[in-house]
Amino acid sequence: MLYKLERLRPHAEHIFVVVNGNLTDGGRQRLEGVADTIWQRENVGFDVWGYKEALAEYGEEKLAQYDELILMNYTWFGPVNPFEPVFERMNALELDYWGMTEHGKLRPNPFTQKDVLHSHIQSHWIAVRRSMFLTDEWRDYWRTMPPIVSYTDSILNHESRFTHHFAQAGFRYEVAFPQRNYSTWHPAFFDAEALLDDGCPALKRRPFFHDPLLLDRHAILARRYVERAEQLGYPIEMIWNNMSRSSQPKVLNTNAAMLEIMPDVDISYDTERPLRIAVIMHIFYTDLTRELLGYAANLPSSYDLFITTTTQENARVIRDIIESEGDPRIGSVDIRVLPSNRGRDMGAFFVGCRDVLVSGDYDLLFKVHSKKTVQENLNAGNFFRRHQLMNLLNSPGYAANLIALFQKEPGLGIVYAPTIHIGYPTLGRGWFANKEPAADLAKKLGIRVPFDDPSPLAPYGCMFAFRPEALSILTDVEWTYKDYPHPKAHFDGSIGHVQERMFTYAAAERGFHTKTVATTRYAAISHTSLEYKIDRMSKFVPGYPIDQVGLLDAAGDFLGGGPVGYVKAYTRLSHPRAIPSLRTMYRPVRGAYRVMWRVMHPRTWWRPRGRVNDEPVESAVDDMELL
Image (cartoon, rainbow, N blue to C red; front, side):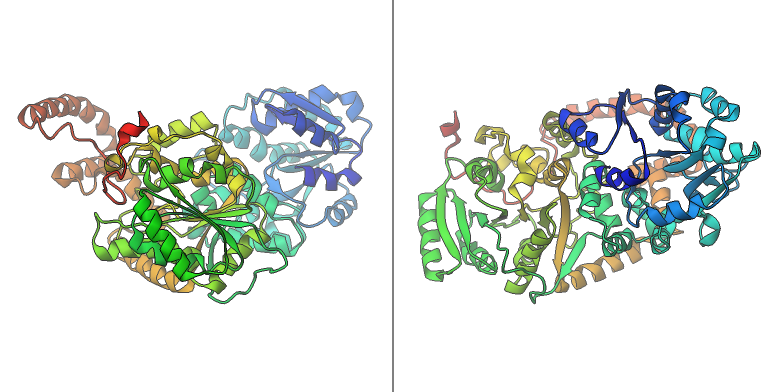
């Protein structure tokens, strides 16, 4: 907003900022540099009621001193192109009001499923001249505005109504970038790149947070919008900073195609700007020490090494291996024998290395560990470990390119491999039993970033690179080993698995964005596997992916639930009106069945729910030490 208002300042004699909600002292001071009036009000009525009440607050007598009034909201980035050519062109026209972009006519109205949605100026920018804003028609429009309590209200009672209402009253209008010049009824969403090419200053936010399935259906590539904005000189870090805090991370990652597929040849690392780097390495299985050290040795500059382990014997073995490897890039080495294995690598990270995380001594940290997933088959377990390590530190050239991402993007907070899907049923259920406890933790820590569904954007397996300040919400907490369960109780829903899924959301709350990264080899393996799986799963479900998902959502989670589950799915799809009555009859039957099961199977019903992740190993230290 500051960037936008600074560039509007030369063209506006008075800038009146309406703040719907709270404003910090720091925020007010920053706004004072670009605004003449800063007015706070309760967050009621969306932007429409903000306009209405601001007009009343400012007063018609003051407004009468001006030739033109611009009603502008925050739902766009810009100016991506300069304002000047647009103002010059529109000032030359004899008009009563004008807009920046336009939404085309639709029949039926998609919000009411009847009548017509008239073509209209989009409400993120409406300019009105004194020939209109000093009339009774203008006064009556705002005086009779019905209450706005939803997004749909704001569309039906203002945005889609305003243009047609005043045109019918005889006022003249034009649009700087009219819909008739484009091939779609909604150019600001479907054809933003063409708008930018034509000189439009505004890039709408919606393509970055809207349903990725709709973008897929219409081949909308928000990444191209970002690339074009960057070519035009817009500081795209502002896009990432804003969208990270306000959108679902996985949705943003998908819409903006924030997966970086990088070669094994260094093409971007700046040797003149080395970062202070440390590697935090938890080693429970010492036979993987050489593998972990080999990956760390691919870093392009010196680094400090912090190793956590569980016994003095492990520490001795690890120290001997480090000396035999003789990596010249290693600066200091700190091997720490932990008092407990509670939390495994997560306890070691948040408790055993907290001093490193909050020290401020490093620009970039890597977290890796000796992962063996012994409850899976050997191929799946080894692939999971390689999936994470190779996509972080595959080779010297690849690691250099990864570090360069952090050099180039000051708002980049955390980087890790894409979601594991080969050998694991993670897709569609990545939260497992962790979503509810994650929501509780987010509320406690003040993380307001919306959660993704059905799976979080997360570093499954917990190996990643990050800026320490990006995770400060989590690392500022003084976790203890008592917060973590015994290693044998490392189930889904326990704090370690919850933390694993919170990294991106914690970073986003601080305004840092996340990127996933992959080698070219992994990208080939992953894409072909995904393409085949989707091809097979789509065989008997008609339509585009957005239609297929809609159909499956309507069926609910009953598919695959045996005969009863399929009957439920059929009922939801074919006879939805019968569901309330059937549910009333079903609940008593289900309750009686559960009572009968518990009586007949007393030794099975109480077992803890959840899935054991990672290595089901015993604690190396007696947990009585914690008491």
